[in-house]
Image 1 (cartoon, rainbow, N blue to C red):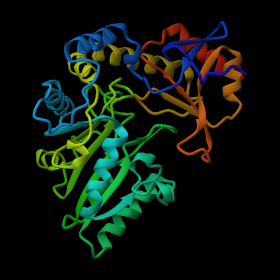
Image 2 (image 1 turned 90 degrees about the horizontal axis):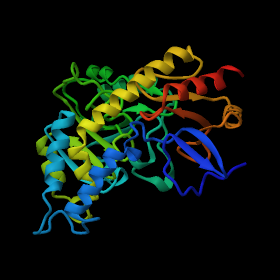
Image 3 (image 1 turned 90 degrees about the vertical axis):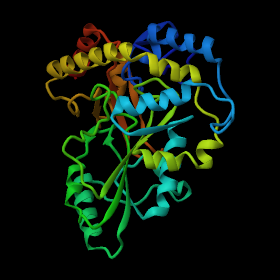
Image 4 (image 1 turned 60 degrees about the vertical axis):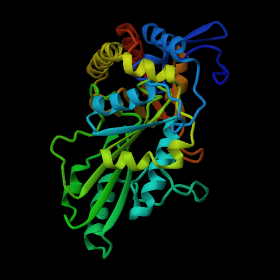
Length: 351
């Protein structure tokens, strides 16, 4: 068995190990920006302008302009009043959940990413496995509780199965209850919908529910930074925290590419959605999938080895904990060719 754990190459459309080339359908670089030459050139331009990194805190009296520019840009791009950027998605998520925990009872949805856990040492929060049942029971619990303030923490979606979550059911919460809905959209932001989060908010505006979105931009958007999207008052308060003022920011060059690479992003987004649409057409429902999302999964433990024999490498590992069930996760990205998708479909179909 080849060892793919010590690669000295990008994980792009293909991976070559011991002289053998494999089509790569894994990882989280859904839009292919991490290996896009035009996007890399923007990153290099950012290095020439701002340097490799900036080790100063965000309350330093000397600041590079790109950090404020990127926060203003991210808020506009994703349709929020304000945003805050930290050096990683994990830091941004831990910051948000710890800050909010003091505001009300924290209620966890199923399968929350470990970065959302308040107490990692005691393992993941105990919840029901089914999101629909959990959300219904949670609404009843909130409505019947004598408490008035709650913090509901969830992934925006299950990127492994995959599965979309319906948060509009929270409109049934008693208007007298104050709820902060904290969603981790690391896998959906800018991937499912162009320049949008994965949760459609058009008809979801309960006055008693405050929506805060956190995300790692390192996945689809190829930016090593953590993002928090919220209203202006919330972000203003967050910026007083030591998490924000005391931590070094993300790479200014990476943020430069994020701000100036939207045209490249749009091209890659369109390529990705075309690939998803075509693969769904030829796949004919043989794998688990949801609309507009580039992940196709299977619980068939033998699928990984069969695809390997066909020169196709997919993600196959227990997640998020080593004790969790193994998932075979087939991931399309914007760099895949039509012939790649047909080869993958053929390898799946012949077994």
